[in-house]
Image (cartoon, rainbow, N blue to C red):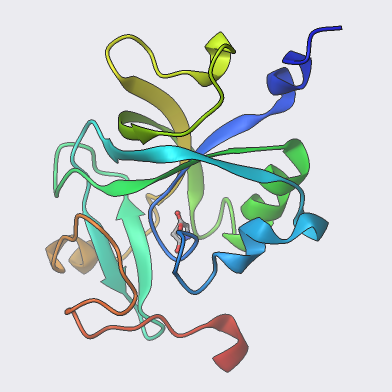
Length: 165
Ligand code: PCA
């Protein structure tokens, strides 16, 4: 048996919002009860997208409008099927966010070497899933566009955690 065989059932996810390290929902990626997630590196979307903070709970949303906004920074994880289904549920997919493909330029890589399916392509890009949305209020496009989300950033719009709602 090849050690890399389970990789076929793993998925790569680009995390740009409250699930990142140091952000309010990161703990769900670390909780083994939800499945497994392994940090692989950091990157930036190849295409620009509008990343806005919207609504009464100051939630970050990547609007599915490639070509507008800024190239968005985030973290790349490989997750198992259990964590992928957990995240779909957690992110209200497909009603709130939709899990869509995105191309990411890798800036820092900590992923395992020697397993071709886990390494960035020779042009330094990777295809990942991302939780973006196409179901947003039209005026959200005119909100400030961020390139790197931090709940406690200078925007002054801290995320309101679910447990407080
Ligand atoms: N959680 C997902 C999408 C937006 C959010 O807050 C993420 O961190 O990528």
